[in-house]
Amino acid sequence: MTATVLIADDEPNIVLALEFMLKREGHRVLVARDGAETMQRIRQENPAVVLLDATMPGLSGFDICEAVRADPALAGTRILMLTAKGRETDKARGLGAGADLYITKPFATSELLGKIREMLA
Image 1 (spheres, rainbow, N blue to C red):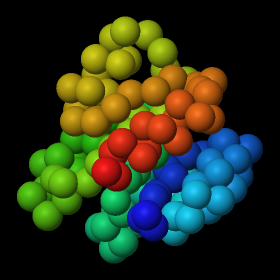
Image 2: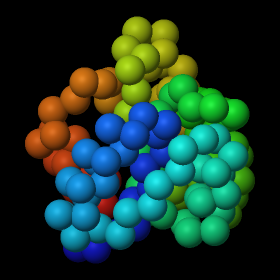
Image 3: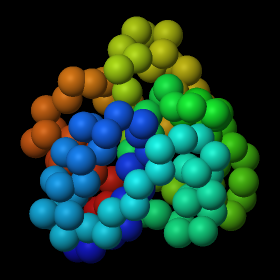
Image 4: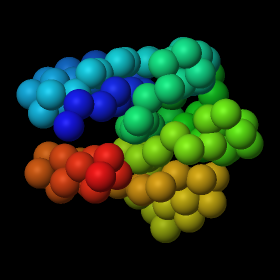
């Protein structure tokens, strides 16, 4: 099943690894490296899933999540927060902002792919 997936992360190594993995799965992959670019891509491309880092230049992942959920045209966008912020308060903040899932880095590739498949099903 081909879907458009947006990787919103400012760490080049993470982006490269995720991009390779998702393209191998047959997905169309878009990349955004800061908060403003992420919002622009979500509005223009309407991705099926956004892999969203919490800490990026400009808008944070938490801010982006809230903005997407507040916009009726984007409210159906699936958001998986993928971040190094692993404290329970961070997780609660991400889910409270509207993330569908919250996974901390480092992550198991197979687990992440499984979660993305579930979100697309």
